[in-house]
Amino acid sequence: MTPKLSAKALAGGPSGAATSTAPSLVLPLADDAATRRLGEDLAMAVRPGEVVALAGDLGAGKSTLARALIRTLAADPELEVPSPTYTLVQSYDTLPPVAHFDLYRLSEPSELDELGFEEAAQASVVLVEWPERAEAVQTRADLRVALEIEGDGRRATITGDDAPMQRLSRSLAIRAFLERSGIPVANRRRFQNDASPRRYETVERDGRTAIVMDAPRLPAGVPVRDGLPYTRVAHIAEDVLPFVALATALRERGFAAPRIFDADLDAGLVLLEHLGADGPLDAERRPLTERYRQAAVVLAELHATAWPRDHLLPGGLTHRVPDFDRGALTIEVELMLEWYCPFGFGRPATAAEREAFAAVWSSLFDRLETADRSLVLRDYHSPNIIWRPAESGRERIGILDFQDSMIGPSAYDLASLAQDARVDMPPELEATLYADYVAARTAAGVFDPAGFAEAYAITAAQRATKLLGIFVRLKLRDGKPQYLGHIPRIKGYLDRTLGHPVLAELRALYRAWGIVERDAR
Image: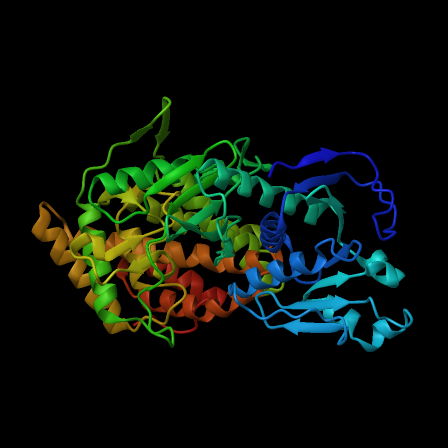
């Protein structure tokens, strides 16, 4: 299905929909299967609080489309989805929730209030068949789908607000990518997302589940230092090339990164292996010791491996792994000054506070210059670790989210694992993981335990400091307040780490600021 963009106004659908001057998508739907696929595509695009108006004569396919959308959000292709012709509204506890209205038998527009339309439109995806029966629905609609019978099939003409129309266009582009990849049916389902702009979904490929990574190239951003945006200073991957390159490199060296089945680097789309859904936590989100210990050993093996700086891909493309350099280390800790301090102190940091902060961290970063270095994955923790009990050795630990990898202090990754930002890691388990890692590295060759201990303290404190800023930024900038719940844990890790002698000045500063409230033990 290839959409045709048209700037022509949608001048009333077959059921008298309101005129719109927005660009429209005109989609030929050859049969019911094509209508159901459009329902899947819409399900990938809609958001809670959006209203989708479904217009069309009897038999035009409104209920078929709505049923496919609801089943997709429910991840249940057999879900009973009756037409709400007589009940007028049917609600579904999907993710996000859906309210399905059929206004064919609406006596008068005022009945809409009694049906709870406005309440539903606050938190649910709202699907409305026969929207022309209530002007309020047409005014409120974020997307308008007009279905018409055309030959043996149908035609859908879709208009709407910019944001949902852009998401739908992206969803249709993913459908086209899947068809080019040899997956014409797909059975698309939403998959968990993370704190990044990336989005994921699952599809069926050769009878098995695969993952689609949807990661459009990041916009350049405003310059923040030396004429460069934050992503360039911090060496954040701006497209999917690093992920594809590093997945290939990891697999070539025996580590369980996902296989890459297909990729459109320009579009930011990757079709990859689904490594599994089992992680290192139990049902109550407590760490499972055996799994974390295995992850620590695999990490030690990864850090004992020689990694090239340049990774070649077909077509002459190259990804050069950047350094976790002073610029990146510094701009990350400064996130605490920019975001956490105004939030936590109720005021911006003063010039004197910024100067003291910079001096302490500059001295610590000097000490990292001689630290053990390797490929650093950056986020080696519970969301990105897959437990694969049917495998053995390195293959038991699946590795995800490594596109931001750099060459830097290897201790950083162990701190990411042993002080998991999303999990309460007891000090005893942190000590066990540390000991397992050091034993494996020592057995693998030349290793300096004392130097590593110092680097571990510095990088653990650096990561915790950065996360305080990031979690506040996620709330204030990105509308994700749930990350604030991790802040007490991060402060606890800081309190635990600041007992190392190399962090004495940082401990004094953070105590004076109230970041930690007692002497670290």
